[in-house]
Amino acid sequence: MPNNDLAIVILAAGKGTRLKSSLAKVLHRAGGRALVEHVLRACAPLGARTTVVVVGHQAEQVTSVAVPLGAETVLQQPQHGTGHAMQVARRALGRTKFAIVLPGDAPLVRTTTLKAMISAHRVGDAAATILTAVLADPSGYGRVVRKSQTTVAAIVEESQLTDEQRDINEINSSIYCFTLEKLWPALAQIKPTNAHRELYLTDAIAVLAGKGETVLAQVVGDAREALGCNTRADLADVDRTFREWKRDSLMDEGVTIQLPESVLIDPDVTAREDTVIEPGVQLLGKTKIGARCTIRTGSVLSDAILGDDVTVEPHCVVAQSRLDDGVIIGPFARLRPDNHLKAGARIGNFVELKKSTVGEGTKAMHLSYLGDAKIGSKTNIGAGTITCNYDGFHKYPTNVGNKVFIGSDTTLVAPVRVGDGSYVAAGSTITENVPADGLGIARGRQANKPGWAAKKRRELAAAGKPKKKRSSRKLRRAAKKRK
Ligand code: UD1
Ligand code: MG
Figure (cartoon, rainbow, N blue to C red):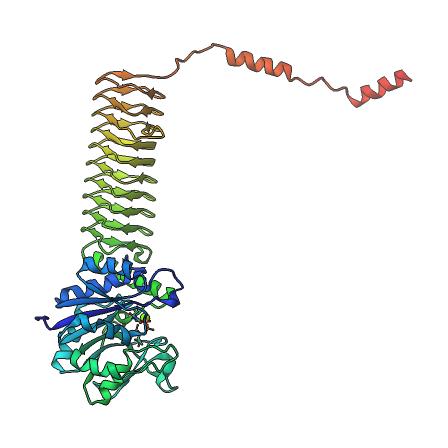
């Protein structure tokens, strides 16, 4: 469908008083994105001629989200209501025939729903088409007063409802399609006759209907698409729905998610077939997971790239790191940014990595810190190995070759190199390079003193021996004698 005659207008100037926040409403996040970003993304595939975002509160920040997504912005300052916001957008729309108007705070709307609304509007030759929804609890929303089965007489805001209208459960989503040459004269007629003294776009509907123009209502199939975010509770509801949709789409692609409602996944995350995600996992940012991986309970992955057959044991934290095929990490591993774990590498419990490369099949299984380290393949990093990469001013690299054995409790004082095939003795503090196939040992020499402990015990026992107490009978006899 060519949409050269179509513009998109997103109303995003409001503060969002009911959120009680210093952040403008449309910048609040749900489902891993700012609200206004969701709306822009839903509109992008429509191929409209122009997309205009009306900005006001925190205009600069909202603009910096909107412009990279192909929109232009117009400033509404001050904000005198949704009708006024539309008047402000008028100049940017030029002579475009139709406009889809959306609030920046209703982020769940889908592209297919918008497409259906445009077709209904075109086919019905309407002046306005309103996307409506039927809600069990319509409170807080403008209600749709029907003229006939298919047409609308008015939208009445919550604050202006009569008692009978209060029972209407068809609500205005605030998403509309307008034929602009009909909207502008109607908008010119509306008045700020409400408690907030604002111009309500919703009032233009009654004006159009009163003139005998066709105003259609398109009822959305999934009512959640119409949900707006005026309060923190609304944000939580909308977030829940986004997360559910994301999990459902991954499950459709062959991913197992256990106790799905406990798993939080950002929109750009991908995972391939037969991967298993256990309860309480968070997959954030641009995390990409291969096939047959297991992400066990309590792990948090952000911007992580996992190959196939990777296991993340419980309670790992992984940021901006690459884990190649067959890698196993955790439980309780922490990967700070910029690590690359090559195929078959194993990172165990209480191991922290930062900016490090771990070669194929290399193991660091217990209680270590590896920072700014390049470690070759098939190397064993003993328990308690620490790279001392920082001198308080600069960071220095540690290089460990292939097939190296680093004994437990080694400190590697960087910059330092440990050559291929070498050994480092347990408990060493390595400050100089270790040559290939050599042994680095840097610790005090052990001295054994035979019999020392037994002698010590005897001495201690003798010194601490208490004097023997006399029995009470002996004490009485001694007292008698003294008399
Ligand atoms: C609006 C509708 C209501 C509908 C509901 C659906 C009006 C008068 N009411 O109410 O019928 O059921 O949405 O969610 O339109 N905005 C501006 N400039 C302004 C005022 C608002 O750009 O001067 C923007 C806001 O940033 C927001 C959108 O317009 O993104 C809607 O405003 P909001 O205050 O959320 O309206 P609701 O009370 O939700
Ligand atoms: Mg709203």
